[in-house]
Length: 370
Ligand code: UDP
Image (cartoon, rainbow, N blue to C red):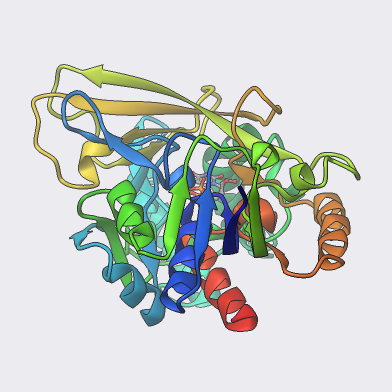
C-alpha cells in the first residue's frame, strides 16, 4: 500500500529538519528519511560513557546575527552561552586565532610588535578583519613581513592539509572566514548570538522534528524507498548522487577523527587548538568546554582531513573551486527541469554553509514554495 505525503524530505540534518518543521506548521504532512541511524546530520552529538557531550562530526559552534534564526531555534532549545576561542601553537607559544594583537605581542619583540600594530591600524583601521591574501598585497615592507609570517605560520600548512590546496588556490570566502584581526578581540566569531544548545544539538533536532505532521524514518536510503508518494521533494543529499553522477562526481573533503579519553580534568585551555604546522592533523577539540561540563576525565578529538571517497567516508566540505561550481551548475540545471524537486543544504547546494546560513537558505526556499 502506498503512503501519501505532501512532502518528502531526504536527510534529517539541519536543512531538512528546519524545512520539515516549517512545512509541518503550515499544516502539511512531511516524511523525513535519513540513511544514517540518527537525526541531526553532521551536527549530531551524543553523550559518551563519561557523560561528556561529543560532536561526532567535529566541532559545531552556533552563531548568528539574524534575529529570525535565533528566535526560531530558541523555540526548540535553551542555550549554554559560549564564546568560541581558538588558539594555535606558533614558535612554541600558544596564541589567539584569528591572529590578533595579542598574537603579535607574544611572537615579536616589543618594538617590532608596536610597528606592526601601528601600521595595521593606519592601513586598515582598528578592530577590522583583514583577509590574509589582502594583507599579502600590502606595499608596506613591514606589513609584507608580517603577512609572510602569518601566511606561513597560520594559513599555508593548515590550508594544504584541510583542502589539499594552497591558500591562493582556494576560491570563495573560505579563507576570509579566519582573518587577521587589527585589535585585541580574541573571539573566533563576532556574531551577536553565540551559543551551544544546552542539551545538545541532537536534542534540539528531536524537538524540531517532534510535530504531529512529521514522520521520521531512519536507516532508510532514498534509493531503497518504496511505496511512498509525495507532491514535493526536498533533497539534502549530494546532488550528483541523486542524478547517478551523470556529469561526474562533485569532489568533497572529508575528515577522520581520532577520539581519546584521558584520565585528566583538562587537556587544553580552550575547546579548539589549531595545528597550523606540518603535523598531519589540523586541530584538537576538547569537547567539555562547549557545555562547561565537569568531569575528572576529558575526551579530545584529533582531526585529520582527507579526500572524500564514495563508500569509504563521509562528505564534509564542498571544495570551493570554479570548476566544481560549474559541475554543480550542470546538476542544478538538470534539477530545475523537474517540478517540485528542490535541493537543500551543504550537499544539495554544494555550498560551504555555516549552520546559520543553511537555516537562512531554508527560510528563503520556504517563502518561495509555500
Ligand atoms: N584556516 C587556516 N588556519 C587556521 C584556521 C583556518 O589556514 O588556523 C583557513 C583554512 O583554509 C580553513 C579556513 O581558513 O579551511 C576556514 O576556517 P574555519 O575554522 O572557518 O573552518 P571550519 O571550522 O569550517 O572547518
